[in-house]
Image (cartoon, rainbow, N blue to C red):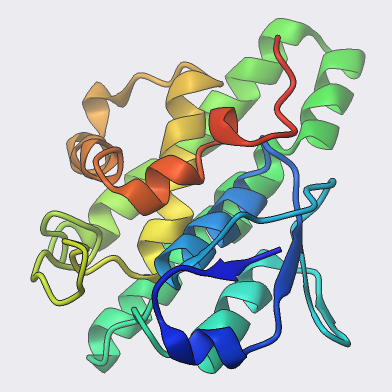
Amino acid sequence: MAKNVGDSKLQEQPKLKLYSYWRSSCSWRVRIALNLKDFSKLSPLNYVPVLVDEDIVIADSFAILMYLEEKYHQNPLLPQDLHKRAINFQAANIVSSSIQPLQNLSVLKYIEEKVSSDEKFAWAQRHIGKGFAALEQLLKGFAGRYATGDEVFLVLSLSDILNADLFLAPQIHGAITRFKLDMTQFPLLSKLHEAYGELPAFQAAMPEKQPDRVEG
């Protein structure tokens, strides 16, 4: 269950349950959002990202993020500037529509069974690289320390962390650790990856820190 850690107003809100899976990038982006919204101790963790808020059940990471953004207004995940907001949505959609579906476990297992294990990773690297090239092009005129800026405006030293960052952080981390993608060709995303690693809300959401993690 999610528990408030500092805002007395949130104590009046119903507790939330997140059903998750430690390695899922969809689950990871929701965990980051909950951490940024000052919720913690997510339990129980299960298989997919499903948020339960009393009688409301939401089973899609993007929908969950928008629900949290609309209901809990502290630490906004989207900028007020309409242009930057559109860039955030574009970046998030590149990850969720053009990269992640092509690297899902079911797709990779099918390729491994029908072709080979080597082709499985070549496939993932090819499509992640294509998506990363698009992200580099999209964000090059907007990125600061984070995806669309670097102005400090939140408490706890959180800086301009927005919706796009919640999608980018898990995707970049997975590309590096799981698919061994050569990041030298993506300097902007590499810089963002280093910045995300310094933030407590992102650190706490990492797969290796989840209680349902499986070794190996």
